[in-house]
Length: 84
Ligand SMILES: [Zn+2]
Image 1 (tube, helix red, strand yellow):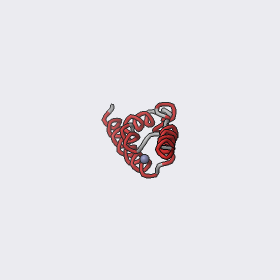
Image 2 (cartoon, protein in one colour):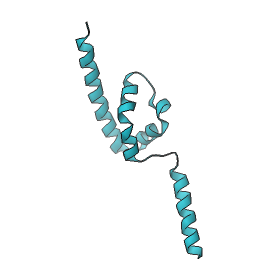
Image 3 (cartoon, protein in one colour):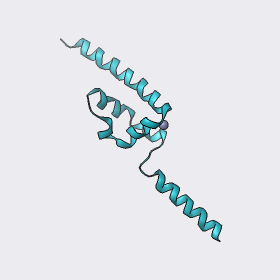
Image 4 (tube, helix red, strand yellow):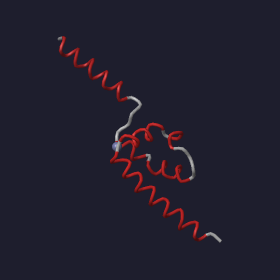
């Protein structure tokens, strides 16, 4: 059946297109690591380019990530506060 083969071909192309990109759930799993790295002055594009790319084009994830960054920053500054 040509239709069936065509459909499989399209599915295959779609899968290739998605390769190198990640979805929101996968990106979210890396947020803590990215946030900690970013606070240490690292470039998140060097650490997890795929997650960084996802953040660049997904407003929902960026919002979540920035909220996490705020929490991490607060934790970091409270830790610094206790140092002599
Ligand atoms: Zn997302």
